Image (cartoon, rainbow, N blue to C red; front, top):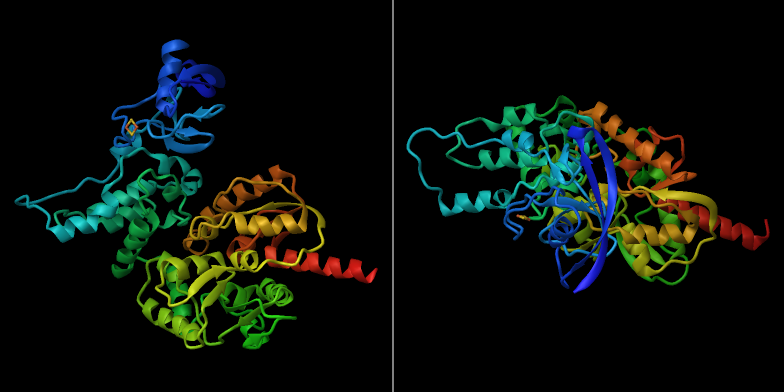
Length: 486
Ligand code: FES
């Protein structure tokens, strides 16, 4: 047995009682779950405490709550001392019980006609990845799009695709999914992060529904323009100045001994729109003994096409990109754009290893820069944090170069998933939330490592938004100046 102290957010909207926190000390068994702790509080302190639970085995989804801000199943999560238990971020009935009926009632149901027939083994297999949902609504409670637009939410989209995959279903799910917000999803993967069943809703439902929308001629016009640009130029952004590839040689040799050789996949934004951070990165790599090979025939990775369901020319792009690096015998391909990195890692089958620049720098080990006299906060690009599982490498580098790092909770900025081009008002609303979160930190600058986030966030904050590579180079320049006595 052990004694633990926990705090629970209590409220009763019917009595207009504002949420307040109450702290309890209880005794529970070793390995007790959050649900056991709640039951003990109810038994020993307050029989009126309201929460839901049914199966106690992670199968019904009814016990979902937040523990220390993260959605979890109370029956599966181990209770810990000093934990904070709150309801999911949904309308609250009382205490930890939230309104789930309005969402569940709107989930699509199969519409059958004629004789019922069993599904074949293949049909069951196709539906399986989307059928595991236990309707806990953790995904709905964290979805950033739902905070700013009318969107049925992740699990509703999952259910639309589940029905669309069912040959017995007689409803055309595509117009329905579009009407319910199919193009509102930024593919940030926050829903996957909190799903107890790890259902890959963006990839297995949203992008697949968008593919079907494309086949039905229902792709958003702005997304079609991007696809046309890629088809005509191999690039997803218009070139506004000399491109990165036009400015650099194919091989950049490092100063001193070669510690590592990487191929550089530039991505469309760094190539055509914001080449400076990529040029800064080349100087950083040079200084740290990393040889960079840059095949000039590389093209768009295809991420804007995959996210918006326009996959017709994708095989061609993949073949060109893989060929560009594989033909040179490159074993490690480095990306600097989070979206490109996530695409190469998750949507390609490559004969080489793909690494983000922050992974490369941490693996190779970097020369210590001078500390810059700034307070910085870091914005996690969704396609780096969740798409590539990279939380620590950028922080390890950042903390070497700034005097103070002020943490900021990760949240999508609204630039991804085709939302910035297709739903600009939603993208701006999400960007505004990021701007507010940045202001709350009190930081002097915002640092990130994705060109889309950098570009988008800069429109919503008066603080300078800097790429981590640029910041690191500034740290080296300061070091050199200090050394030369300037
Ligand atoms: Fe059923 Fe927790 S009580 S999932």
